[in-house]
Length: 465
Image (cartoon, rainbow, N blue to C red; front, side, top):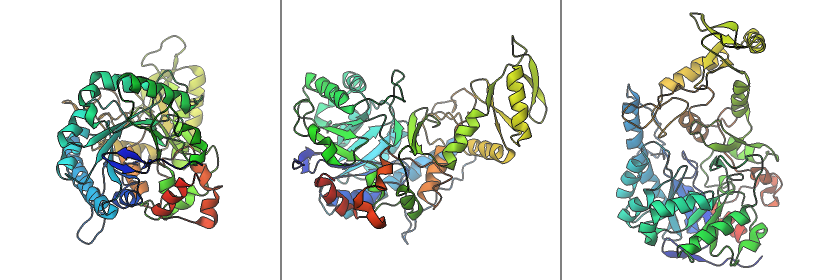
């Protein structure tokens, strides 16, 4: 493979190799600092980052507020403290090499307040902010205020054009690069639009070519594109290098850094990665954000799938073929189903799925009593980790609600991501992964259960493998 050409990113010439930021403590100060020390760009997560006490122990996320708003304020304060803590660790670990970026989600709760708080407390430690999961129009102005570069994550040229026209053209000096995250291949939340088919992945090359065309039109000919999602062996992407249709390009790795010694994920999670097979990653739409997301098909995800399959539409009054009464809840309130759906519902009840829970779409799902209790408790315990949550109906507005019913078909994303990040349980929690995660099992680099250091991984990537 041809040699990688260094690029200037966030004001310094570095290897065009970026560590993808993974939320809720999955990419932290140790992993990102090590990536920067190896000559690339390390990215720690600014999404509910961990703090440590004087003895170096992770401080548990425990909320004391009685209301959602009170817990939301606790979350913001802890998130800022954790982000500052991880930035300092990354800075010290990097030893002045590479660059350190922070990744945030625009749709996380109080994103702007958290960003301001972390950046105010880390001046000189963070060189750039990557941001996706939404349309972060205000990201550019915010980063300019702190004189650091910004890196919007988009999944189409159309999305970048909208950001540029509305806001970014005013702050072009601090635009470090544009991250194209492939919506079919990347792990975590994905930016599939309503006109794109989740079952029909598109070749990223034409999409990057269109993005470069838009960037060239507005004078961003030298601004790099960062290819994210689906990147494993760089030799498979060699035709992107020094290609005038693509221009300056760097590559972001989200999944491969999971399996390094510096990665903070559990040993159980690391072992699980080595057993995955092609097809074990599922692009689904259960997330309370409303976005598609890619995660491992484990019992957690299969339970969500089964939950939604035990679902029927109902009417409050007999209407047309919805003429069969069905009693719901402890008070036995009547709703009306079709005769066919009533037969299915009684079958589920006979199997032990006795709790019928209403959804915002005038449907019922059927779950067993322990699951119903867990869903209810998780909804009540909401701390507002998202700007808007379909599962709990929290919204970051004066009313504190989306105005819709809470959706039991979804889940508390904060709870499960905290659990998988801080325990050995990777079977009954949400396990985000890119669609190439199955390649760990067949890659000779990991033969015999070998787990490299970040430095060894970066060195390996530069060879094309």
